[in-house]
Image (cartoon, rainbow, N blue to C red; front, side, top):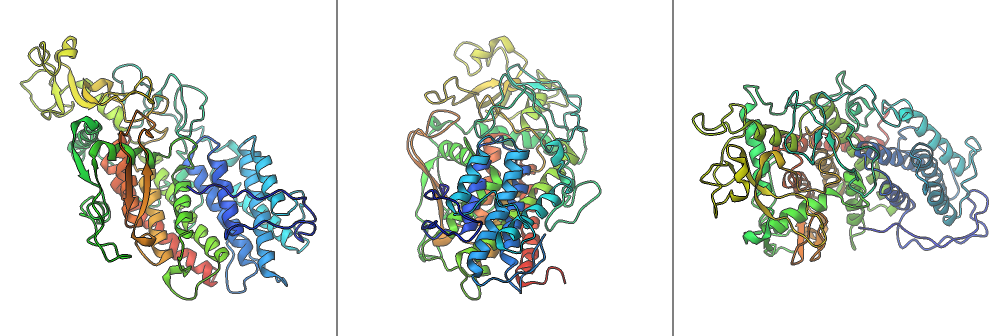
Length: 606
């Protein structure tokens, strides 16, 4: 992960002349990159709301793009359409970009977001860039005023974009159909097993380690399908892209799939114990290269950058699944999935020797042009991905696996009408995975011995649940009651506070992957691989791994696919959430890229 750039302090002079102040060497980073790192820093300090952060990333990108385009006769602005001239265009753009970025982020994270550190951070960044944040003119014609005007335009547009910014993005009209599931107690009661159920936790702590007021989840962004998008066309019901409903219990078209997908989640849960000794090759030569919406790939024959096969990377299956799940979960101080793909994009852009040819064609551009165009396309795509995914979440209001599995398992087993614990609406049996506790299976020395008081109930072979001390204890897998199942998560988070269908991770990631592929002109990461190294003992949810694990991907779409399936490994999504999220994200990414290019070439408003 790239750390935010720290520049030496200096005394801020008049707006943009930079007199009496020598800007620091940025190490090759553009001013747009500095502000992208700044917003990522702010995102990490607040409660994760992927929808809101995707919007903020996009609006920041719009502000920076418009400031750049204002000094380019052949480019179209998005929100600000006036054109300007300057003797020193580079300096003018940097100043305009900074003032636009400052105004937008100050509004979003200090005045709306109430982030205590925002004023100090943003003011310090301006001062270190030798700019005066107190300069507020919007009509003086100088670059600082241009930036302020752009910032005001973006803020004004955001007040009317359907996000409910004035209500702090809260849709007070949404009321969950199901009463909360109390995670610390067995089972669940659902008025409708196909609908989302909030969780009641002893304590709520977000994925980036911040406390969340209250003990019962609230649905984040059920109205988000109606937010103004970049390239998506609006729809009356908030579903600009609608693949149809997820599998539903009791629906002849989806009942079997509902149960099978619950079983698939349990299969993944049953593979989270490294003591089973099962190993797999997770190299790009063995995994990836899937058709869209599938996991049918068998990897890539060779690394195109080296012409050689990818070396094998054989690890314990449980270590791979846990490492992948935690990497894509975006743990403490997370920048959330939209920001995560900004981090990846920045790492790619920093690759030594990378030719900055947009779309892989034409003349190389300077880093500022590369960055403002990349951010507009990338963050336009993830903003649209949030709208598309949350539109479906709000519309279909689908259940999460913890509710599905506890509900089905609490009813009984649905496979053997003549057997114990039968209920036609229950969980299917599968030897070694889902079984009914019997007097024989719970006899002394047998696999269900510790469940002897639960004869007739459904048991599952799965992750045992939250360890008391995740730093020193590992839960492993074993036989537990289906009504007690929890995802591979922390006890203070368990499952995100919104419906499952479709997966936000899958949608964000595939949208970003499409843009990165188009923007760089290659489906492959520079050098043919992007890697993340997990040291021994670095897991968060429980102790481990015993040995270091390196996960990596050859292509942007490989990374996106594994981001999606990681949510099944965690147990917070079913396959339909992932698959349809990938497909939805692909549309978002391709459409955003196509629209972004019209702003680049000046044909957006034709």
